[in-house]
Amino acid sequence: MRLFCLPHAGGSASLFRHWQAELKPDIEVCPLQLPGREARLQEVPLRDMAVVVKHLVELVSQYTDKPYALFGHSMGALLSFELARAMRSQGLAAPMHLFVASYRAPQVLDDTGVKTKELDPEKILQARRVLDLPAVLTDQLVRVVGPTLLADTALCESYRYVAQPPLSCPVSAFRGSTDYVDAESTEAWREMTHGPFTSRTFLGDHFFLRELPRGLLQTLRRSLSKTTASPPLAVTLHP
Image 1 (cartoon, rainbow, N blue to C red):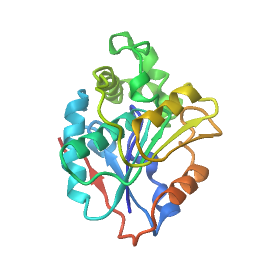
Image 2 (cartoon, rainbow, N blue to C red; image 1 turned 135 degrees about the horizontal axis):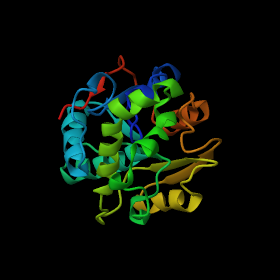
Image 3 (tube, rainbow, N blue to C red; image 1 turned 120 degrees about the vertical axis):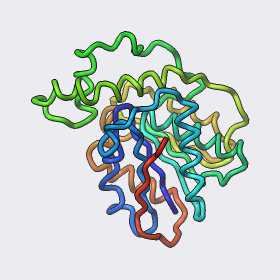
């Protein structure tokens, strides 16, 4: 079983760097690295949801020789959801399970969040905790990571939910106990599947999985079918 993982806005594949050790040998963790971060920092970050999903489909469809599941945190949850729908609409292998964390169900999203045009350097600095960088690097953060944060925000702003038939695969939705994503918005993911739905709240805030979330990983392991694992697969998204 492969588990493709997508991070929050401004996040990177390293968010999932310790997961393989916890989930082996049954689950092969495959973090998806988007342009504009870490080893791909020099690449222009993508700002349009449709473009990102198109490239994700092209990438993931190459690795459907074995069953797979999708996990997304915050912005990554929205990307994972649209990826699952795009795979289905194109007649490609569908995920065995969709895991979404700390993001409102797409049909209840509103436009009351921070807009790209409202983001100034000071507000970008407030996002440094997301990237786990020391305060001494805040100036560097604005200069180097700011464009990626702005692009990710624009990506989410460009999203408009379009009603389609619910997914067939199971969906599991998670949130932190002090998450700004409330329980009602998390439970609303139930409407996105004809299959089984579960939700769970873990101790912590919106970024409850920044520290090794063993409770979450145990939940993922229990939810996924046991299959013979292959060596970990390193995957990057190339536009």
